[in-house]
Image (cartoon, rainbow over all chains, first blue to last red):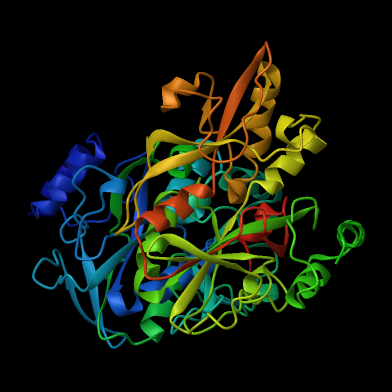
Length: 277
Length: 277
């Protein structure tokens, strides 16, 4: 596929339903990033671990809901996630996967059907795209998007609550904004607990152990202009880093920015609390 | 202990901190109901299952958050629940426990230290006392309390989302109130997702499969006066009934009304979402 073909396909997919986008991804016809697709629908980080470690990872999510807002878990021996949408199959419905063995990235692949076994359990955690969409729609500009960069992410000195082998620092993403927008952003994002919720810190990066804001641990450095404050949110890299540190024999995640697009409306927190009603 | 001694002790405990109440319970000096104690603090339903079934029960809670608002889980091989308060030990800190074997109630006991093994996992789910306290403080009277009865509870025709052996109907508790109070009650209880959150139904009981409102499946029948509507909330009996139906070799729950009193402030949903901050 040429670059212009890919750009055209992306434009077409922007008008498609989550179900149609997942079908396109499943067929192998789209393997790009999902930011900007499925607008209005919750997207998810993916963490697939051996069943032996699943109970401890569940505990880790329960104890650290801001970095790990759990929205779906597969049944034993199944790769389906019916709670998250029509026919969702975690083996094929994510555009790209990273495979880690003993904590090391060994492969990036577009489909894990040949790697999946019934001894794996897949967890899906809500991601920041939903709250970013809400901030933009409320008129709060996001610099990393304006500059076409990846949001900067930092290891903080805030510890997660450990569970079994899973432990480590909270990783936070940073978005600079005016002080009045920071207050509005707290209000807006607190409505999205399934997408990391309200910030974990507003103001001096040193307070949360970040010595050099211009040197993020992941993503791209982003300018903080005069009169702006850095606003930090819990980030889905937190559980990824915790799982990598645990050096499991196998761990599969989405490739960065290549998320699972669900059928859950981003703003529909009531439905998420009431899946049966 | 005479009845008047017990009443005097209850009055004394009303002025004690959750930690002091748990210590009294742990020593075996109080084994009564916890309604009215630890006001302002979240109380929890207890469900202790074999580790073999823990992952499926975790899934059941994640998929059914209204009846199963999970607030704490023990680590493998531990009976402590540090997230929920100072030195909380699930073997001794609940006033009374029901022991079920293969789904049958075989014993009620004040301490499970002699039954506990490292192969058990304890789950604590927020209970309705917190939202009832909020309703009363907002001036919404609760008839079952005024009449000194147990709230009526009903099997509904709303199915839970199954996980492994855990399945069954949603059980709902009912509180009659004026139509305007019903609207206020939705608003108030929606602030307490960790205590079953907003109602699952307001109005005609038949809509959710309850044919005779005067014959609750648990608790006491409660009059609905002219101009009032019945308001139904998801109830912690839901997971208990689901676990009993699964006929596990062992299942331990709190005895009805004999809850775990935590150090978590009932209104502190921010803290619950942010345990590390």
